[in-house]
Image 1 (cartoon, helix red, strand yellow):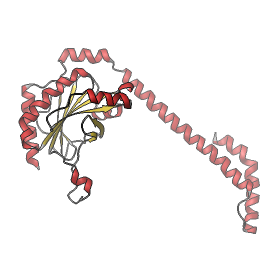
Image 2: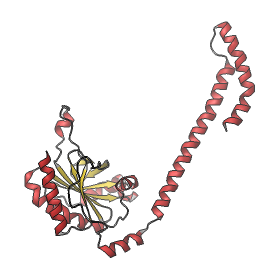
Image 3: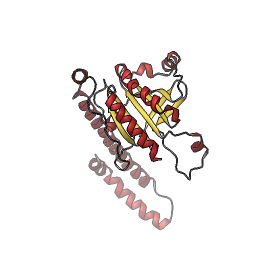
Image 4: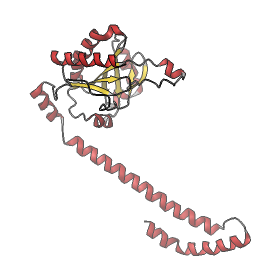
Length: 268
């Protein structure tokens, strides 16, 4: 495209060169042909940039479609039937802080508290801003992810024993996150009506929160494939994942979570 544009603009370039010489002699403003030529070339440069951006967007959309089609609902349900939601074993020991990865940023909405973002991260000691003072960051947060209704009970099998063990310390919070990708439920009026019908938790440390809209990029960061099981993460004050589990809790895994949480609370 740029080659054709350059050929088409060649007579104008010669004209503008001649005009530029006259400008240097006269010390006047650029001539009309020179201004027109620059605008003519800028138009084609802008067109090339937009074409490249569109091509990149199409490539990303194609890659996503291919990725999503590799695995469908039937593959997910087949895996769940084989292992009852335990797609992998839970961590047995706490993940060292130098090996821990950050929990991806996630925008949420709460029926009682409005907007919320996870992970909650402690502000630096020197940060004396009013916002930093108002934000209470727990020493440990248990984040339970449910992408389908069937995995919400799995989340509760972790969050309730977790709060029973550590709730009295006042240093922990549990977040049961439900993902809603339906465009209808994500619309403002339906969302508000949905929140009015939800039963509120009477435990201030247990938060039922919701993520509306597309969550593909978030899932990719955490390497989440099967949407029919639950994903559980123990997150520290700096927003790092220090332990993880899957599906419904077992007694052995709850013991592991309890031990790792105790270590995490002692780190401070």
